[in-house]
Image 1 (cartoon, rainbow, N blue to C red):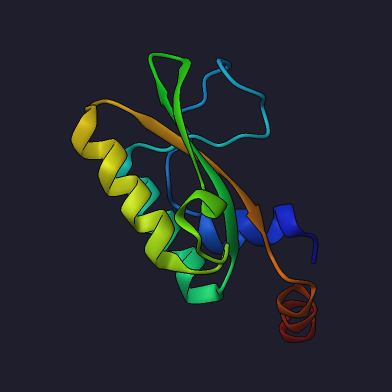
Image 2: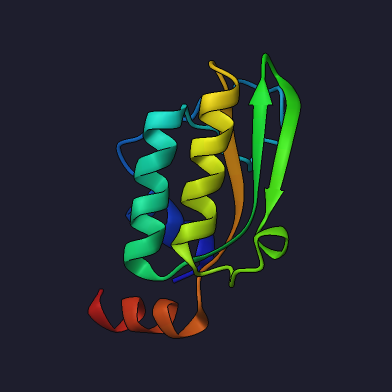
Length: 113
C-alpha cells in the first residue's frame, strides 16, 4: 500500500476536502473540526506530521512546524496545540499538513488486505 492510498482510506475517509483549486490538487484542506479528526487519526496510527499550514480565503495565513515546538513529528502534543492556537486566533481557516506514514505501518497494512 502506498502512503497516499493509506491516508485516503484510513485518515481522510468521510471528511470533506475544501481545496477547490486554490492550492495544489494533492493538498487536502479541511475545516478545523474535520482537521481535528485527521489529527486524532494520525495520533492513533502514529503518523508523522511535519508541518501544518493554515489558510484563509484561499491564501496561506500561517504555518507551524514540529521543530519550532521542539517535538518529534509523531508527538501529538505539538500539532494539537498548533490547531488550537490557529483556531483561537482566526476563525474560518482551512488546514493542510505534510504527513509521513512509516514503511512499517504500510507493510503491516499490506499484510492485512
